Length: 93
Length: 92
Image (tube, rainbow over all chains, first blue to last red):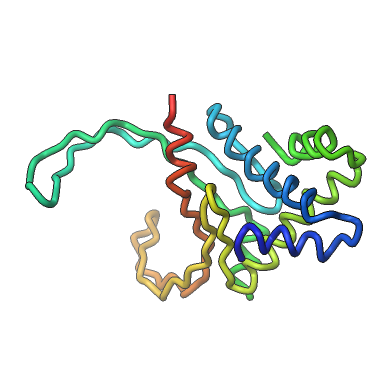
């Protein structure tokens, strides 16, 4: 299911909702998560899961083409931990 | 950041009541959860993909007793962040 299919589904389930408003709502959901992570905040959605930032240390890697060793700087990466309810539902279906 | 911040924004931006806004946020997550439960993936452009993966049986060890055990096959949910999300988190 893509984002636009999610928008459509939300409209199907709410006869009074316009497609435009549905799109705004879905955007708010994901933009809120992104903005919170950007500011270093943890995001916890009960029944769904939590998003946190994990720090990856700097490392050395090799350019596969030239064989040259390059330094990869430390970076942050988003991490999602599935909530218990969803984990069980996904596994038991 | 929780669902209540999302509710607040929907209330401000569209003007639905807080109760309606809360129901809509709940519905978005219900649709996502119901879809994932069927094994179908969710692809959110600019954010990332939620994918259900099937894990086969594997052997593990109880770290306390050293006893070998079989970890049974299971389905797990993984999140792969999009390049856009990763870049925005690392942007200064």
